[in-house]
Image 1 (cartoon, rainbow, N blue to C red):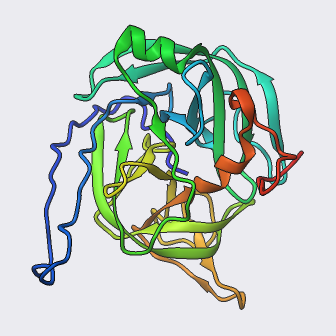
Image 2 (cartoon, one colour; image 1 turned 60 degrees about the vertical axis):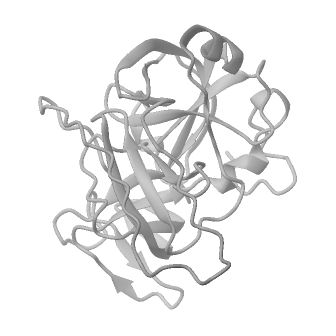
Amino acid sequence: MKKSLVGALGVVCALLFAVAGTAPAVGAPPATVKAVNFAGTVALSNCSGSVIRMPNSQPGDPALVLSNGHCLETGFPGAGEVITDQPSSRTFSLLGASGSRVATLRAHKVSYATMTDTDISIYELTQTYAQIQRSYGISALTLNDRHPVAGSAIKVVSGYWKRIYSCNVDGFVYRLKEGDWTWRDSVRYTSSCNTIGGTSGSPVIDTTTGKVVAVNNTGNEDGATCTVNNPCEVDENGNVTIHQGINYAQETYIIVPCIGIGNKVDLSLPGCTLPKP
């Protein structure tokens, strides 16, 4: 897990957008690239995160913050553990486009958190989207409701470090195992997203749609096999491989069917596949 690096200095990374490959065929529309910055991301005490909305979230809904399950202030959830509606008054530093802090947001509760099958935490805030927009001019990031696409260009935006990593989706991992935890259908990055401690919980943004497709959570640091900070890949036949220096994220489209009216987590909704308590 990409935990924080206590005492280290943050790094501000310039945003580089490169267009690679051959010219498109005659008549093909040019590729569209969405500008990605820090607006809507947050810094936690030990991790990164973002203010998120579902495609159907309403301005008057309480805003949500997405991070990792292993970033919870109460510690790592155990294997098989699912947390719902846990009181929390945690604070988050809301960032503007340049990475400067524009406000402090406060949680009302942990709506959902787990490290089983995925690695996510969802906090409900005391303010609505409309209140945040009106007070600070910041809009939430929208979760894509579709599975990410292999080869797509992505950016991992760390509010903790105020740093943006650029790479592509290298592929998908049937099972990603780290210590006591196993995650399903994880995103593997190409090597240029060399995320470090403190980037846990960063939104992974597809540069074509500008939407969040995953949440950054781990990487193999030392070349060990299936240990903490050294996840291994397990395929459908049980074969185990490791990729030292390669990092991973958990898909977020699976969250969308589990959020109901008023931005409330409802694990009984049709199509919701998130683990249940």
